[in-house]
Image (cartoon, rainbow, N blue to C red):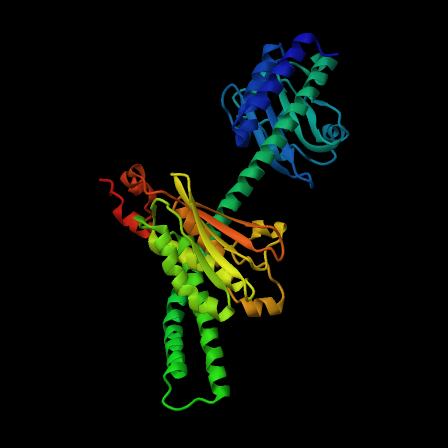
Length: 448
């Protein structure tokens, strides 16, 4: 039975294991303190060593501590620790303590403390009754003077050493995994940048010839030198529509690339939202008339907003374009306004196909499409990027965007807010301005 003072020491050592923060050096920091505590309760130990083995019985980690800061190579003949078949090893393999008197078999003759060592206590370090290592204690007394309490207390210490070893091993594994994750993350960032660069370059290169194709097809349709047959006119019209879709796709991909790479610029100014909406509706009239959809602007007295007018125009084209696209002939698309003096809310409402509640959260994700059938995709077109781009632009301009619908067949409403061009906002215009990252780096002061 271990005495009360030694139980107190054990609890102190246990707390030391739990308190050491530098997990990858836990045993290195713990073992010297363990030796000090053992000496403080009267055990005549000259050194303490923990040796860990792998599944094949080979030594894979060693720790050593004494009062002279010697290393295990200076003190112990490490290769003799596990000579299969030795008496002490057989005892340790079965979970028992072994006392060795013939220290010359284990200790290097050059070890400065060798004259003080008269025996060694070897204790098994186990994990689920499987031997994972040994605790070796160099004693300043003969083997005959060891008692059962010393062995029992030593076995208790091996449990702490096993705990420390497992904690250290876990910490090392986590550190290794964390490093690997960081490395993988860096590679992913690099690949993402390469992807953005490719999309940006490809989009630029594609847009020029596609714009030329659209112009030539439009000229062939509207200003032909010869009369066109009905069939040829139909083919040219389909070519024009497909070309416009491809240009829209290229533009969307280019916008996404700019947003995600931080190369987009937001240059906010004070402007009238009602006027901008009226101009945008005029642009959409041809498409709305083609679908027999009525466009309405519910004008009201609202303050000017502080945002990038070109980017807001792009948002309006996306929202109104979607509303027209998903509204059946005879339906209506209306735009209304509301302001609380701090923000202006612009709502685009349609009487179209509506959105089920479960799909509302998916709307603003990249490449989100709520229509999966071939018919709906072929008739609606689109890339699934418009709402993602709109949300990103609104966020860059310090606004919010949301969608609402009562369900299928009940239409939908998209509302986005932008800050009012108050005196305070205009005085702090730099807060609302966004510069491309490349330009920011060029303007950063150089340390001298």
